[in-house]
Image (tube, rainbow, N blue to C red; front, side):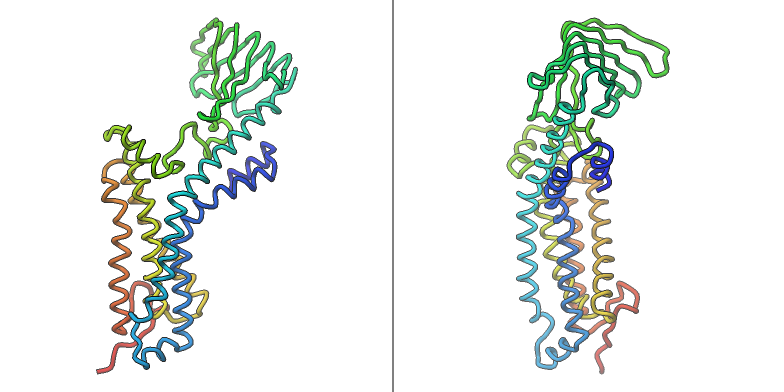
Amino acid sequence: MLSITELIVTRGVHLSQVAGMVLFLLPDILTFALPAVTLMSVLVAFLRLSADSEIIAMKSSGISLYQMLPPVIFFSLAAFMACLAITAFAAPWGNRSFKDLLFKIAETKADLGIKERIFCEPFDNLVFYVNNFSREERVLKDVFVVDRRDEEMTNTIVSDEARIIMRPAERTITLLFMRGTIFLVEKNLEGSRTIKFNTYALNIGLKDVLADLASRKKAPHELSVGQLFDQLKSTPETEKKYSRIMRELFEKLSIPLAVFFMGIIGVPLGAQIRGRVRSTGIGVSLIVFSLFYLFLMIIRGVCSTGVLSPALGVWIPDLFLIVSAIVLLRRASNERPIHLLPRLFFGGNKPEN
């Protein structure tokens, strides 16, 4: 959101475009939020039942905690299916559309940001001065460009003419200079070169619009399941990209499974916690989810480096949730207190002899 705000404040992006960015980012946000929301929903519901002594009443009528699970399983399955649809279809669509919108913003900045006979900087570290600019044909006459994007060298381009060529598939804008000279000066001023050319292409990628939101190539999280399989076949196993594609592919199933098991874990936690219904439930849910998310990020980082195979690593958080769900359900069903968090939150007396 800070990066999007920067687009509004410093780059004059229209609010309708910002609304489109937020819309396209929503599937990714929902993927992140669904495990926490599912856990919180089940936990608060059972916490309310516990606070109203409804669980005690049901147990007195011969209904065990396991017999209360079917509605939770149905709800968790619905959340699982929703998350599966989002990770497989909606999230790749949203990420692709987000990058396409950034490219349109870059295209607009190229058309409107370059002005005749005025020094202007439509893109970061690219200063333009043109004597004449035909927006219909996208042709620039008598062009002067200073390119400071290279950390070690400043390139100054002087050309008779340049054309703006849009490349939507590659999400780049190419400035094709004709008949000119490039002056290359090292940043420490220890060396310089002069190059004359007939044609010279200068590429402007989405990273020049907003570096931390965009890249010139499609990232794995922008690809559908079929595209991921295609890239997996064409990428050597020795490359780090192979591990990242594998991780992304398996996570399209492992994260929805995590949503399902988060819902199951909410049953024993909600049945055992005591305290204010809503505030306590939300607090415990956020703590549990934060621990899971931290665990997931550590495993994700290890898998991306290739140290641990993604085929094995991405399932470790799910295995942790499965074991936790079984242990917590058994303890709650046997009326044994859960001591994962301070006693302040948990109740439950040991069964009488």
